[in-house]
Image 1: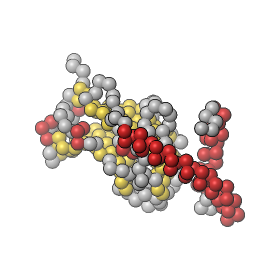
Image 2: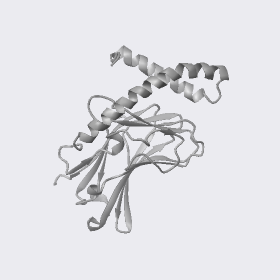
Image 3: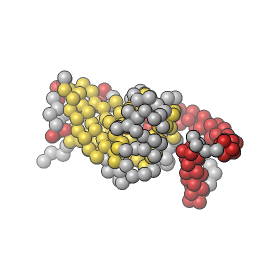
Image 4: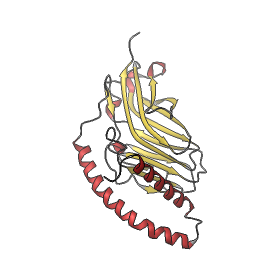
Length: 253
């Protein structure tokens, strides 16, 4: 498909950076520049739309037929829906806080500017997730931006304090950014919360939550969810090429 070599990828990256700059300047650009840019963008938009329609259809069919993700040494593993198959609701500009991106993912923020865009992309490579998710932020006047992942019911079944819950993230940032992962476990009337900083320089970035140090009531575990929290996200593009959560029993001492 086209030039997939290093030179081709460099050209594609340069073109992408050019259109991102144009998008950021569109609000204040002269009208003549907007007309010229729109005339150049429309053929590209049509071609990309046709390609994405076919690619999304085929990827969705492949993802539906594929088995669940397997992680050796674990007793439970899961890849959220947004990274398994195309979502009808996963693209949009200015999403309201709490907008659902499929069955198990939501975006939360308190920014009044309306300068957040969400896009679902195709796979980053031959291995890994069939889809990727990107959040692009321009101006940001809020205090938080987060993605909340609702873990399926079987993540809570048989969960013990001897378990370690693991999140492996394939992450790409346009600019340096602090990212935190917070595991929430509802058990009875209480919610256990464990916060960890994500090592964004690692590939993949792995975060582990050792439940041995929690006050978890093993007999009353109801549900789990994971918050990915992005600190000062203005003028940045946060791309998640894959997200896999798993759990494994801690090795005996």
